[in-house]
Length: 536
Image (cartoon, rainbow, N blue to C red; front, side):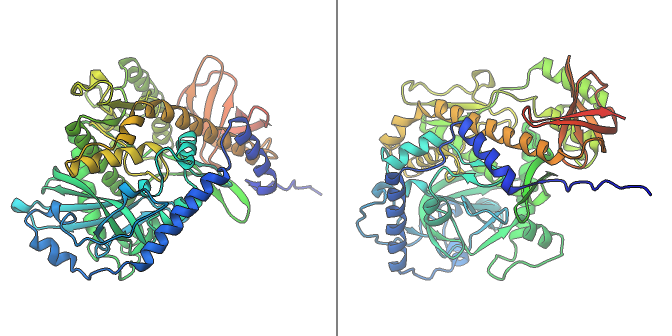
């Protein structure tokens, strides 16, 4: 009688994974707790805002009629009614909104589980001609309203720099009282926001833009799955969502993608490994963006490009930079394409190539993952404080973000990224024809170093967590065979991406890049967080 060995379920339980993740957090000095004082400051600010919000009386406004009446659509938010707010004790007095934009039917589009909602959108077709064609209103959480410069809370956000996402829990940039509460653009809640107004022409070119601090109220928290289903005609959105939202998102998203092509930029649909959990059971899956997500991302990129425009006009700011790919890296990537069987004609540019690749194809997916090494050295460049000379305009001066092929600034995720709070304040000051606040100017030259330190740490932690979870998933699957493709080779070993499960392993010898076949799990080294494979 034959005996069948039971194959362990792919994944790992929370009781085993979480202690190991706690160890990773400890080894990398992630600040896991806020001080009592910082928590109290966050709670006081949240409570004070919530008390104010309950007392506000909003004048009913027909947004469509208001928009039709104003001469320039980009000025429509600035011409909304104002509210009289009381004196405040815990909120940042200089960052209080007075414009009442609660009549605007904003919605958010995020992963279903998200609670730290930075952005809400409203898209309008304003008819074309001299008034422009599309008005993009993009509300960004006004974190400055809640965080006093120089406070203990402010100090601890500088130590964190960015939210860190791990399988079991996140380490937030701000206390949950703010990031998941009073500062988050949650549905049907009155919130302070920095409301961008960006006017586009029929081809998606930006005509003009401005940003005003205002009070908003999102109508719905939509998931990517919901919007994707509605776009495909397989579902409907709530009645509170503007009926033309999905169509306009597609129209504007495609126009902005076309502008990206014209600039020489590239948005590759790179398959990424993501953590998934179900009843305290954790696994890793491959995931590529849906078209809806790509179009939504274009709105964020548009806002960042316009933010850089305002900073340049102000001659004060901090830009996100990425140097162009080196010629030797392009040559290396061409060899990878040849090895993987990816057709890359000599006269075809890298951006043109990646736009036609399908991440569902194993060879294409392997190439796209390898291509992430093409652009290295992302950073931040502050200007206008110590050196007040006009900012140079060439890529050689390190100002351009090479992948976007434009000047670009981070302003759309202040709940999750420290630098965005400062960028927003510069753009608000420019739109209002005011000087940049001194607390912003004082911080600008220190921000690039702080962001490099904290984002580097976050990347290191996420990588450690991923390789740990991969190794734990494959333990007990020794001698099992899986289909994979060789995606990278150096002098000592070959990196293999398995198709399913979504893990990577190594073979300790050189194999042909692009080789696709069956690989046997030889062993799992938990200490090194490595899966050792052997081609069958």
